[in-house]
Image (cartoon, rainbow, N blue to C red; front, side, top):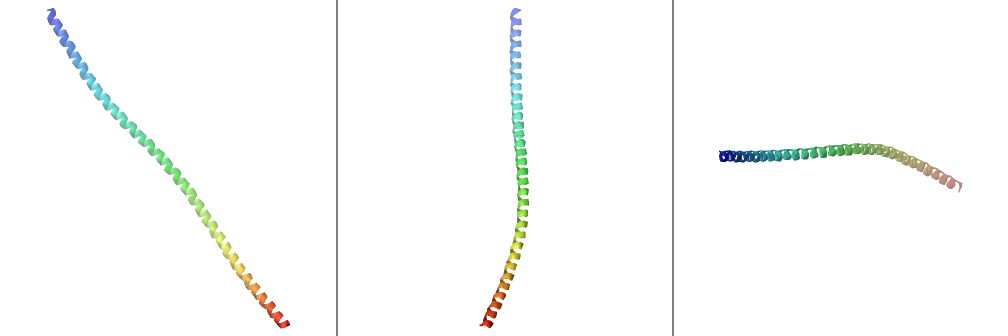
Length: 115
């Protein structure tokens, strides 16, 4: 009887070892799946973070662009004002030049009459 008990005990240990091996294999499989899911989620989180950084950078660039556009608009208006002033000054110079020419002609006429 002792031999039968011993055989049953060995079979029982072999079954337990097989069960443990099966569980270990299943747990390794599950661990690999969980690791793959973790890696995928970590990669997705990194992509989201990069997207957020790019969105912030884009918003900053857009804000800077609007700021520069306002400067350009202001400078264009100033340029128009200065151009208008230059045009007015040129007209004034032309009018004064015309007056000077007229005065010079009158002076020349007076000198001719005096001679």
